[in-house]
Image (cartoon, rainbow, N blue to C red):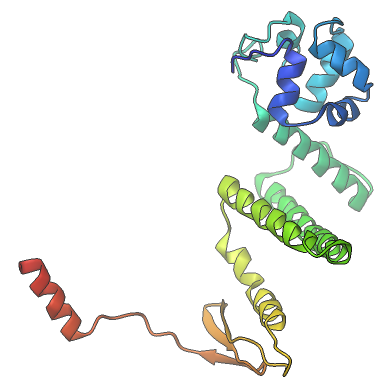
Length: 240
C-alpha cells in the first residue's frame, strides 16, 4: 500500500484504524511520542519498532527504513495489512483468555481437532460475553436519552452485519439459538393485553410457531408448488 503519510508509524496507525491516543496506549508510550514519530520529528528506535511489530505484526525492517511509500513487506516478501494486525491481536487475546480460565497456557502445538475444540469453547465464551455486554450497553442507552437506544441498535446491527460479511455464519450454530431468539422476539412484540406476534422458527430439522398467547406448537411448512393453472400460464408465456 503506497501512502502519502510522512512515516511508517503513521501508515500503521491509519491502517489499523486507531486514534493517536489508542495507538499510544497500545504501544505503552506517550501521545506526544506518536505525534513526533508521525511527523518525522523523532527517529524511530529499534526497541520501539520491535514493540510495534509485537503489537501489530508490522515488519521491523520496513519500519526502520522510514520509507512510508514502500510496501510494508518483511524480508521474505510477505505483505503486512490490517488483517495481520487483527490475527496478532486475536492470538494474544485468545492466549490471555485461556490463561485466565485455565490458569496456565500450554505453548506446545495442539492437534488440529483439539485446536478446533478449544476455539469453539472460546467462541462460546465470547458469544456469551458479547450478549451480556450488548444487553448492558443498550440498557444503559435507554436510561440516557430518547434516541440513544436507537443509536445503540444501529451500532449493534452494523457490527453483526460486518461479522457476517467478513467471516460468514455457521447455520448449525445459529440453529442452536433459534428458540431463544424467537422467544425474545415474541416477548418484545407483546401488546397491552400480553399477546405477541406469531413467530416461526426452525429447530433440529423441525418447524415451530410461537402463537400470540405464547404457546409453542410444531408446524409443517409445505414447500411452494405452482398450481397447474399457473404452470400452464407460464408455458403459454414462454411460447408466446
